[in-house]
Length: 282
Image 1 (cartoon, rainbow, N blue to C red):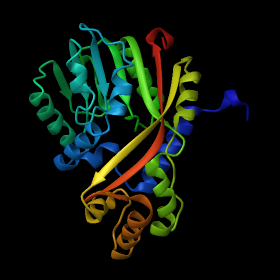
Image 2: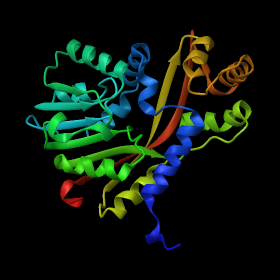
Image 3: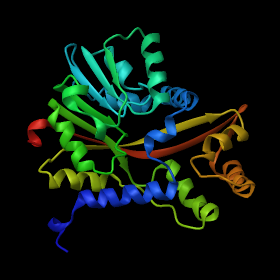
Image 4: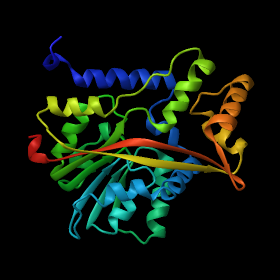
């Protein structure tokens, strides 16, 4: 097959669906319905400020900027961006994330942030958004099966820039999946789509983005092995005592390291920033 004949959007969708089916999840938003998990995610993100700095400091923010943050989670980026911009709209489907984001914004005294509790694919720009926006961004929130349609919609509501952040290669947390999945479920772990597919989707759309890659460390802290097991149980689809014992052993011997009274899960992941002016997709 000629390279130009490959339907990269279908490649993305196929990898996305295989990964979702393998993990038995209902999509990214379904994981974050509980307030407790959303709050833990915010705490974890704030303990790893390198990623936040990498995203925010590279945006062309001005005091009069309007920003759309897609898949904003608990406001990890939306709240600090709102302190620098004129207005921010956050699109986030998960109830737990929205609740924590509202609390975070109130704590920080942010009043120029509006939240739309929907998936990006469900958004009606005319009814739900105050477009156009100077900056549209989606930071590690591209869990969308039809990525081409999602990007086209981003371009339509931007009057300036679109910024996407995604992963290259095997992430630190995926390596554990690769190691454990066959033992837990009798099959290989299915990877989701990475930045190579995303770039080719953009290229096929006539978008030739700027690209920057950075190797970034990430650390999660747990008060004990039990806390780590509880945190990873759903992620690894643990449903039996035998599976839990396999996970516990792996965490104790290979994934976690002791530091004082805590256990740390650390790893490095290659993260990628892609950005372009909207006239590159119209």
